Length: 129
Length: 502
Image (cartoon, rainbow over all chains, first blue to last red):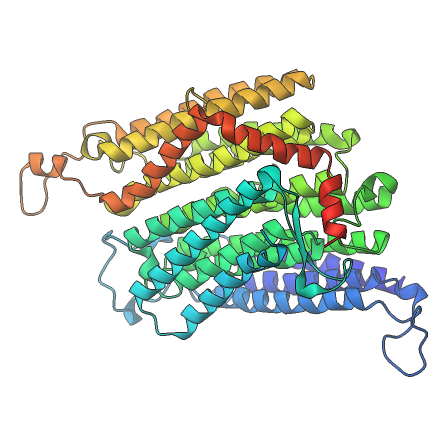
């Protein structure tokens, strides 16, 4: 029961956060979402009727299911790498991580400060896009 | 063909891509390695198709573990057909990227090779969690490819498109993973062979399978979760848009077909949901194209609409409906990529995809115009191109199943598709062309007749347009293959047996 409630609370927080405006809050929302789904995976192993995974003198039929734990490990690693990439996307660009914008004319501007870059303008050349 | 060679379709692109990352970035060697690997994958896929025409389904449990524990790699006709088409599209898009100069950017070739490895794995695996892993393997290099730009030249629109793409795909993958977790909790397995018919046994398993299908539908951009496609694909480079259009959504569609055929056993009780949702997808997709004014946005909205058509094949579960859906899938992959490549060639050479920004391309670049026109007519379903055969069989299947409203919607959407294609045609290809002089004041005649798009840039689009003609005229051959594939989905017992014995 506690696993289900925890997963639910985490999912609630996740949905609230990834509907926010700032990219960093969205990233935090996805971190919580990944935690919630990992708890769902662990619960799928039938934690109510099984015992701990490691230790001396355990009955093999009652030991914790190893397959969901392998699933969770894989999911954690995948989510971790995507989180890092999302954080890079949050940092790149202008000084804020604002994700709401109107169709502004700056859409084709370079995502870096002009004064620090060495490009020479926005003429369309072969291979620019 | 020995089953033990199946994992090579994943391993070889992965290893070669990894090797390319370690050596210093030399464009010529990168391109050679990329092209060689893609040609090899295409050859292996064609060999699989030829083998599956008469042979048994090939299955292999990875690393020789016992069945039930090992990850099974299974190739039946459906997988082999989609594998062939995706490898052909990856090859043509790679050629386009090389000629457009996009493939010179660092890490383009390794990323494409990792993407192809992920796609191959997703199409061959028969284990649902492994499907999740391979979809992630497919997506992670895509995140890199999406934002790949020239040094210090990346635009804000590309960054915003990337943010949206990564977050939506992460959400869809996580929902799919939750579905797999629920399915494991209810049935105790994620092996497709052991899950056969699980959804008809217990409603809890059906609900878990539905969560999986929801995650996959988000990836396939089914209405109402279709908005991300039209906002992200136009923000990247034309070569990458063409590459993604043929790969990502199609893997999700393949997974929807497979899961519904095996786990739900083609349950007739839920098909009405599919009919309604996918008809809405067709209609809303094509109506969304009306408001757009760049060629790529219009084509991306059409993608949404075409995905509705393809998935109607699985909603009309039956030998004809599934065969029509599979043939439509192959036709659509070829034609859509051809359209993206021909308009992409215009965009790369002339620098703008906005309708009206460049005009009169038909006079200057006759080959591009013909390639676009052929592909556009094929998309709209005009005979003798492949679109006509695909739509005709799908409409026939719909009428046979008694869904007259869906059939009417299909025909109406075809007309609207034709209208938007003509909009692109008149916006970019027709007209008098740019009548302004250059800064040096040279005459109009020289600008008008100078061809900017080289043969190499337009060859992929032209080749795919020719393939569409061939698919239309010689439809019988491919449709027979599609019928074999559909028979394997209607009655998946051979597939299930192969998985359980791997």
